[in-house]
Image 1: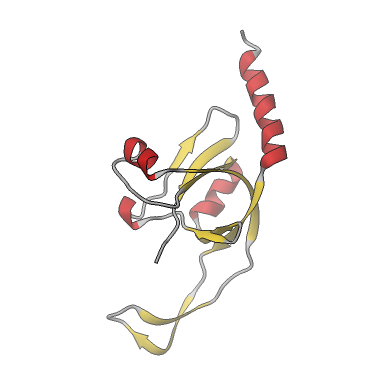
Image 2 (image 1 turned 90 degrees about the vertical axis):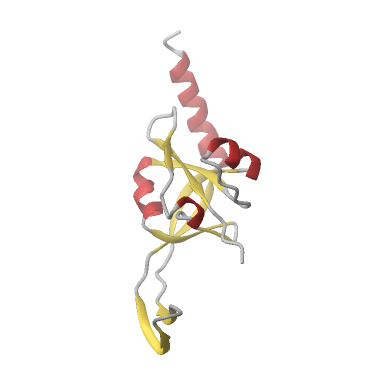
Length: 136
């Protein structure tokens, strides 16, 4: 019975190598006040973008029903779970936006009170994070 966790870990490592995707992580950048700056409307900023950093991840879409049942009553469409290495969690936490297959996601969401949601997994050196899609 002691071999079972080791077999699960080997299977997951192979699965991760085979089905992983590349997410482009854009770190937070500086904001400068532009000519039409309005402090009351928070508009008129010029945002400089940095080069994205590629991160290998696994994705799983989350249905709104799953968010209601599992995560403190939040309904948000377009949310996904990502599974990634623990060393990349800080990159995701400090990111301004994350692009996966040309769709932009954000780590912090207004419905959660701008909190970062990271969960441990049963696999070594891996974490799960919920990303939110901003729909305007």
